[in-house]
Image 1 (cartoon, each protein chain N blue to C red):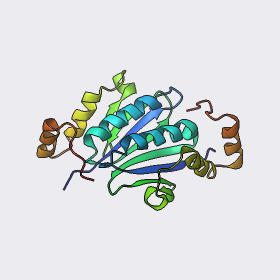
Image 2: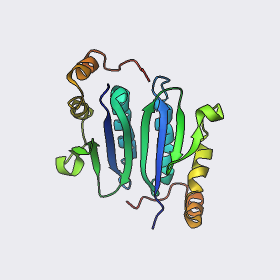
Image 3: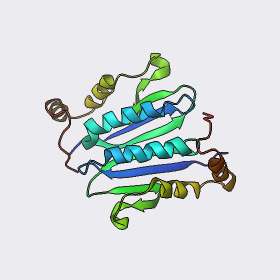
Image 4: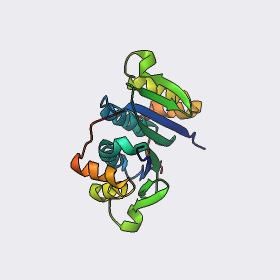
Length: 99
Length: 99
């Protein structure tokens, strides 16, 4: 059975981080769609740009003092897959849809 | 207190509906960000393109036999706001962020 990842992106609305959040959402859903149960976009404030996977924070803009790189987010998601699933993603970065 | 809407977009991954889903997400978060608690993108199959608000289905592609118009989705969300909030959105389609 495929791993099921629950992702959330909390972004500062007043900072106009919505396009960034949507871009990250696109990248993660495009590559990991097969393994993602849901991806939540959460409008917030305070300069937030946080990414959580299965309730665990994998990136905080305020803590890091920068925006996340897509590559580091993808690594964090891949680390939560079964080894053979992650290996398959490396061979086929955009696995054929099987929905 | 602002109304809190919980939105979800369930889309068929194998049909490549991700870009459509992201576009709808953009439109709803751009206009209603102030009132949206979260918007979930849910990869699915079977030709799905469904939109739910607060657990209530407001659009089903299979039932409608077509894709949703952005305008009808926005009407459905506005109908779930307080009257003065919906009126404010009509006056200021993209309210200033207050996050």
